[in-house]
Length: 236
Image 1 (cartoon, helix red, strand yellow):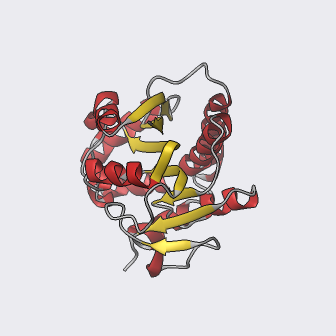
Image 2: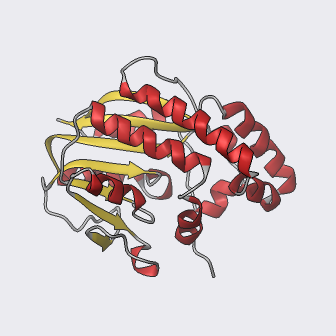
């Protein structure tokens, strides 16, 4: 049986959503001066961790499904986002890319605050717009989709100063809304359409997402909304 992690690993190399996501996170890390060691929680296939490693950044990848597939070609650990197997204050940067929606987000952020030293950087990415809840969220094992307030509240409660919040997939949001409405009628058939768009469509959407992600190199302009929210925060 194909796991969620394996399905994502198949999509990561080419799918338009991942193309823009990786550019966005990379640009944010560069602009905020992120340093290693970087802890990539929910690393998936490990492709982004390998990207950081090629740039000379020390990185440790962690995922609960790491042992089920090919391990990333970086230091990798199979572990739980609620019980991080790392010493307190041992990380300078923590990435939570599409993790918090799967778990008790308060407990996970408690652990992130513990392993980060003072001044450490946290980048958290979550699905946005509770109204977009669909069979995709259920299939992925999501517990929730976020608003700005439901993302910022647990961060601030755990001693993080929020430096920036931005949307991702702002330009494609109307198409996503249309697709999710269709999913309520077509179910998994619509999800397969999202996962495997025609090649020219995928290439066009990837260019749009990468162009949007390039905005993260500068402070403004900042997309206010999107299908995803990204918060950058620093531990006090």
